[in-house]
Image (cartoon, rainbow, N blue to C red; front, side, top):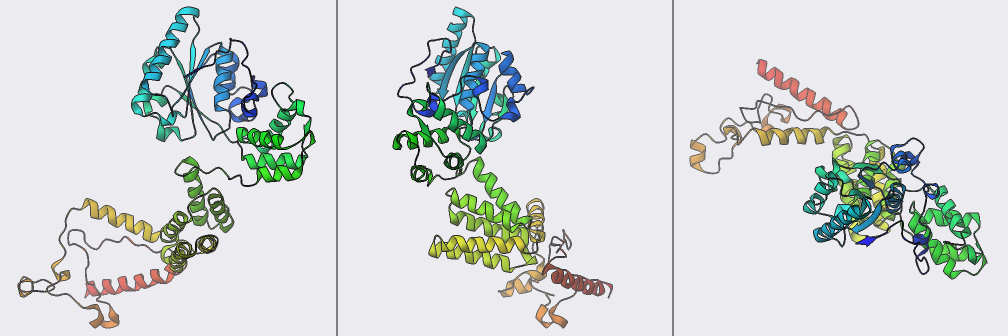
Length: 442
C-alpha cells in the first residue's frame, strides 16, 4: 500500500523514470480522452466540481488511468491511497480502510482508494470494499485493462460508474514527446535534444497508443543520444521491434478474432487480411488462427463452396508442417479465398436446430426399420424389416422412406441458400421432396 498525500511536500523526482516524472499534475496537462473529459462531460464535471463518485477506469495500458485517479483526489482535496491487486490481499484492504477512518477523524477529509489491476481481485476481495464504499469511508476507484462485465462482480459494478478510456492518438503522443523534450523541470529540456518530425512520428507510432511506452522509448533514445539533433539511426534502432497491443486471452484478443471472423463473413478480403496480420504481428499463435479459419469455413461458407473447408485444412497442415512464414501465407490465402467465396450458414443453423431437438426430445428409439439385424433374434424381432435399400430403388432414391423417430415426424433442419453450390443442392432436395410427396399420394 502506498500513500500519496497531495498536500505533503512535492516528491523528489530525481532518479525516477521519465514517464513518472512527466505524469500530468493538472487536467490541462492531460492528453486525450476527450469523449469523457470534454467540456460538460460527467467525468470532467466531477473533477472540476470536486463532487466525486466511485468509478472504474477501463482501458489499455498507458491511457492515464492512475493519473485520472490522482487528479480526482486532488480536485476534491482527498487523501490518495493506492493498492495493487497483483500484490494486495484482504489484510491490505482492511489496513487501508482503518487508515481512512483515522484520517477522517483527524482532519475530516475523505480518502480515494485506487486499486490498480482491480480485475485480479477475486470475488471475496472485491466484496471487502462494499460496506466501506456504502458508508462513505472510501471513495473507490479501480483501474482495469479487462472487460469489467466479465471480471468484476455485479455488486461492485452497481456501486461504481465505468468510464472507458481509449488508446491515445499519435498526434497526442507527439505533443507529449515535444512536451518532454522541452520541460526543464520534469523532462529532458536541460539536455537540449531535438527530434526531426518524422522521427517523432516514428516514436509515436511505435508506442501504439500508450503514453508510458512513448516516454520510455524517448528516454532510451535520449540516453543513447548526445545534445542537439537526435540521430535518425538511434530512433529507428530503438523503435524497431515494438509489437502491437495484443493480450493473449484478453479483451484485445477476442475483439480482434471477432473482427477477423466478421470480415470473412462480410466478404471483405482486405479487412480479413488486416486483422489476420494484426494478430500475427501481435504474437498470436498461427495454429490457433488456422483452427479458427477452419471454423469459419464450416460456419459461414459451408456447402455454398465446400472447397473453402479443404483449403482451410490445407492451410492448417502447411502451418503445422512448415511453420512461419510459409504457413502464415497459406492461412492468408485461405482467408482471402473464404472472404470472396459465396456464403451460407445453412449447415450451421441446421446443426444447431438438430442439436436442440436432440437435447430436448429425450431418448427416442431408432425406428425398427432402420435398425441393424446382425443376429437371428434381432431379425425375428423385426429389426431392419421393411427397410428399403436406396441403391435398389429407381434413381437410387427410396421415395417416401422415413429416417427420423416416429414421435418427431420428418423434421427439416437444413435449408440451403440460393448462393454457390447450395443452389444446386436446394434444387436437388426440392426434386427429392416432390418424389416423397408423390409416393405419399400413391
